[in-house]
Length: 224
Image (cartoon, rainbow, N blue to C red; front, side, top):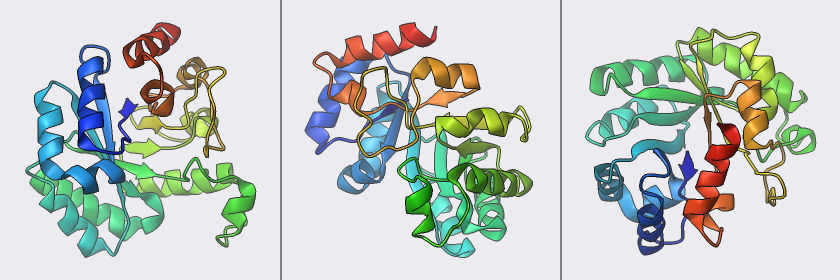
C-alpha cells in the first residue's frame, strides 16, 4: 500500500500517474483527505486503485458511527478507527458499516508507530508498546473487528493470539538503508512479510525516490 502523503493534489496526481500498474492500494490519510476531499478519493479509485482511507476516527460512539455513514458514498475498501476508543465505539462503528457499506473493512489502530515506551509513558500508559498492542488488539477482535493496524514488531505476537482471518496492516515499513524518520518501531518489507503481515504500508521510501515506480517494483521484488 502506498501512503499518499503529499503537499498538494497536483503532486499526488503526478505520483499516481507514475505508479499506475505498480501499486494496487493507495492509502489516503488525513492530510490528503482534508486538502482534497471526497472528489480526490473518487478520482483515485477511478484510476483503478483500491482505497484505504486512513482517518483514524476516535470520538463518542454515535459520532464515529455517523461519520462512517457519511462516507458511504465513497469508493473505499478500508477505513481506520482507534481501538482505544473502546468496545462500544467499535461496535457502533461496525454496525454503521454493516448498514451503510457492508464490504468496508474497518481496521482497529492499536499503538501508533511513532510511539516507543518513553513516549507512551508520557500519555499515562505504563505498559510497553507491545503490551498495549496486545490489550487493544484483543479488545478490538472481541468487539468484532476483523482488521488491525500495528507496527511490524508486533505482528508475530499478534499472530499467536488472534484468529488467522484477522487482517494485519503494518505501517513502519522501511527498506534496508532507508531513513526511519519519526517512525520508531520499523521493519523491512521482507521481515514484515515473514512475520505474517497481510498488507505493508510504504510512503516516503517510494514518494521521495528519484524513480517512484522503480522503488515500488524493488519492494515488490523483495517480498515476492
